[in-house]
Image (cartoon, rainbow, N blue to C red):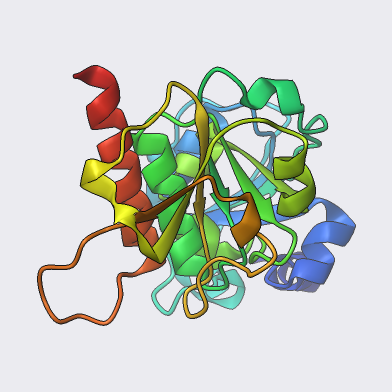
Length: 249
């Protein structure tokens, strides 16, 4: 049985304030936990059902493991139907974002995305298409929000995610900026340069007005139907797919 202090700590990590204060976040599900175990992230504690223990990959002895009942897992889970395992992971102290490191490749920039599911899906997309990092505006939802971590399906373990003022960042580079907007040129008539930045914006308002002057290539995903708009995570996936297609052809 989990103690009240254990339950209290895990539940506190559902909130950004306490994640930041404790430099800890939670991830749920065997697959995701195993991804983090095999990454550079440091696992602090694992709570799991007895049946789930053999499914875990080998982890360092210093990791605290507590076999927990379904009832206890329900008390700490963020999910309606709790997974058979939950882990507390340390939030890494990334080095400062090096402007020079952005050169020679493409990087994905996220401006003011608010929905955790969207950010998690964008992280998964970035991982699929081989991006090394994701750069988010300061106003973007917290990457360690449990719903973001869940939606990333383990991909967060392989990407470095930075938060910064995007206007300052972009102004310090000479890289081309491909911004997803409604009034741009067709994506399929756009020729990507060898390096650059791909910028996607908020779910309802798109890219912030303050960032629009920095866009060197306004890009639109052409519509062939009657939908008003595309989901931002879907837009990011289409942009990344076309970029990689051009790079391999």
